[in-house]
Length: 141
Length: 84
Image (cartoon, rainbow over all chains, first blue to last red; front, side, top):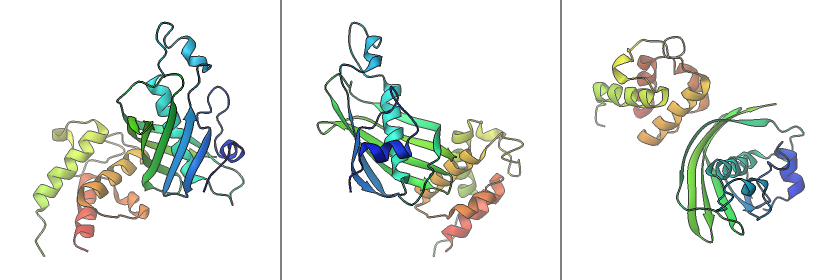
């Protein structure tokens, strides 16, 4: 199942320039998700990171991974989706992500309760793993 | 079924708690309160539960989170699931 941007914006409260999921290409509720983030030269952060060498900050790759992970909990029956607050991150950044790359981010839950969760995610560019990590977050309305 | 080595189990769980709370294992007493004495919150308890599930290949339902109050209770919780 795919989820389009309208649905993404219902679940995620982030907006420009901080919405870091363009579309969801695979979705099994609370089981597995694959999201896409196209990294354009026009991203505002490339202006300063770095002026002489454009590299997507690891902190923002983490943000894209966390946002994709939060989409795991999309429930079409729910009207109000909570804000997911990040609690902890354990991540590795293995290769630089540069303008023109398409980040494919896969996420799956490790442990989920009614208002919190721990997920694991992996980000790839053209099949090569660029980052992976574990994220814990708390959901609050 | 092999009998559980409680001493070893206690040591292993203490090291999980130490890693997540970032407190030296020697400073984690068996009955010290996770919340009051070690400054733990509900999310750390969830991380401990997830770590325990991974290490011992268990599935422990979320209602057991309330039992993660000190090392002694946590060891008892894990041993009860290992015995199932």
